[in-house]
Length: 276
Ligand SMILES: Nc1ncnc2c1ncn2[C@@H]1O[C@H](COP(=O)(O)OP(=O)(O)OP(=O)(O)O)[C@@H](O)[C@H]1O
Ligand SMILES: [Mg+2]
Image 1: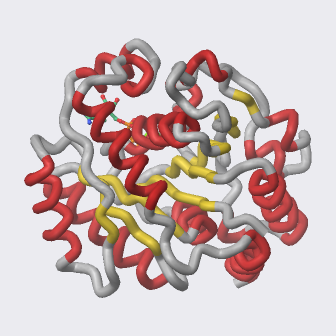
Image 2 (image 1 turned 90 degrees about the horizontal axis):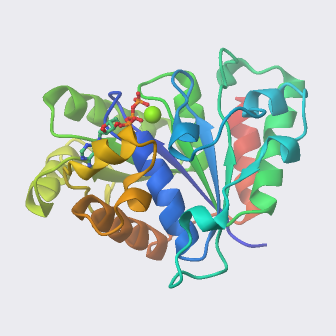
């Protein structure tokens, strides 16, 4: 069986750039030829759809509630929106809208657990990578998505509160995930040196290894892109932020963490997490 990668893009504090990064990385991985599914796993302000120019549609919650099929909820992001002439033509990008709403993944009833598992299995059947854009903080739903994924990109900026909350999130993931692969992604840094320092500072608070894949520079092109409802990698592909996102995407793609499960092992793990 092929190994599928599931990656949760998460943070301790809100507003540090998760959604923008998750959408941008999903596009870059698709450009590199990966079949990518981006799942909006944000509970509150689900807004990845806005950056992808997608409106309405069924949500993951409707699928888990049994109100619609996964196929009717999955939305294909048209290749002419993101693929360039030089990109691999193997890649694809699908989006599953969010609104998990109040359904608490920590206390799903058995029928819903089964449907969630089925949904993840079906997603895995048509993807190389599944990316969860989570909400911020230590909500059980956030932790659950990080546990399912087994690999997390923890985003922070330089603000003391964001750093502190990122440390708490990293420590919690260390405890709740059996073998957590955690990347720390400093965002809105002045340069790589500042990003490295942030990474080393936070690594000092972790027992297990923290992965380094690069950082994203502060760039006015990002808020300008968001203002025009687009991720920066589409709006201004050659600006500094876009370049750093592309490098991060490449590094994470090239570094498949050791011990990546095959699909069978992965879903045994998800089932076990759901039944705990
Ligand atoms: N590298 C960057 N340079 C400049 N501004 C940035 C950068 N990354 C993100 N931002 C700004 O931060 C804002 C918040 O980003 P985003 O919505 O992705 O955060 P979030 O972590 O998903 O928030 P929430 O916790 O509410 O889900 C963006 O609208 C953008 O203006
Ligand atoms: Mg967000």
